[in-house]
Image (cartoon, rainbow over all chains, first blue to last red; front, side, top):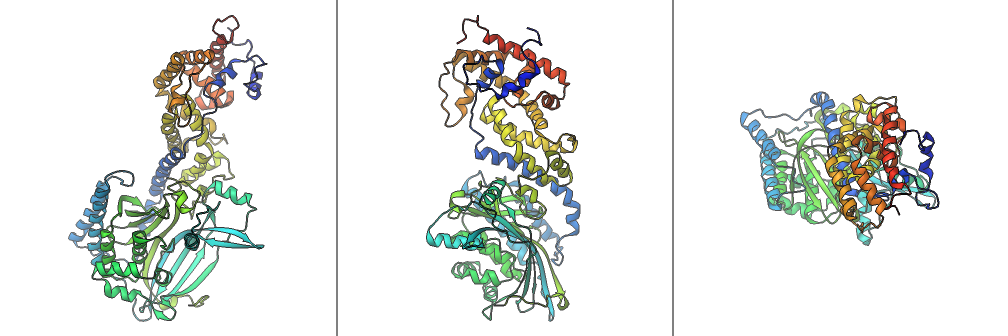
Length: 413
Length: 201
């Protein structure tokens, strides 16, 4: 059969022919198309797993590109004590963590937890011997961080209202409803805080451009008429460190710091809303409404990010974390902006999310945290498991003199 | 696990329907690797569907992921004269699939002999019934006997809907080579349709 007969270029049009139309003589392309026609599309897991493989490579490629810059931006103001014993301990922590495989998906439950406990206890030792940065009279402790939380916007009676997921989640569970809102977008923020010697001060946040959780969610937003998104560049200045005129609970925590057991009981009993919003912490990605240990873990993360937490308190916080059952060691991971650290995580099953805390094993500094979706149904977010739904990254801590604090205050408690 | 890095400087990853062409995204991704995710979002499903149709869902899961990963590794060598990355990606997928040719052929032969398609069998929720069409079973046998390069071109044409020019780009051969391979493949399959064959239904 010669190449020229009965298959001219015009056969390209055969794609338009309905292959099930048996009246027309079938050609060989149509016959070929009958084989395994109409297979289902890829399972969500396989797509997610493939994307994870790619993201891992992207991450590594970015890490290489920014590696040179990152060294210049090492956190100023956090001094290391360069004793050989301490460096060996740091190396030991890192080696211990790296030797563990990534434990989220495998390994025995007990093995995973005891590995996490070991690492956390070592970090507690390192935290205890750090030199604190303390502002003197007329000075401030300055911190800078970057974070993002989820919001969605709804039209309510002709106006567009923004719903912050951190509060939405509370309302949900009060009413027992688990509606899935069709779209969420991230609101990123750059935040700076200035905290004086008495623990009070100011916080200044600048919002970034809202970005959708996925292309599908953006499409849903468009379909709903594109209700307006919060604009970028909104500045919010707040007084921090005082709540209703009273000095913050942090000083109470300081007094409890030597005993992890008492500290844990205090954390579990305390009204977390007050402490988180006013503690000058950099963690606003998602305050814990989760019950029990998920909430305790989240509070530990928030308090570790508080720049004024003294070494003894930080060590005690790591100790409390080491004793929480269910904390998992993630091993060597990258923080939300790509820096290397050791990650530990706790999965809050009730709300279908996992909180990852990533710290620098050499200094015990909490580099950042990441909230990751584990269950779409429980969280009420229509996105695959593994989607990041909030994060924060600590960028800098240093003592500055008073001339650098903001002069205008927009909000005051 | 998806989408780990939202926020600053990574907006492209959030907005999977980025407005640029594939080649713009790929060129940008040389310096800003995160831009490559757009390519994944646009083409993964098609690559996976093609690989699944040829070799089943399990191998498709593995090879589709590998295709995008390899593409990422090679992104600096992408020819920006092609705004659509689809042929490039299908070329990579075809090469990766070649390493599993024996399995692909074995599955075609099994279907031909038993009437039960192992590919359908691997899918959840799809009933791999006995296929009554003798002609389809013969098609499977014919495909199994085609030269590898003929099978590739025939299925890229019939299943992935690539044009001659796109196949030439994907397989890095001249367009005339594509034409002759496709023509030979079609010739073999056409024999199954001839009216004087006793088994055609």
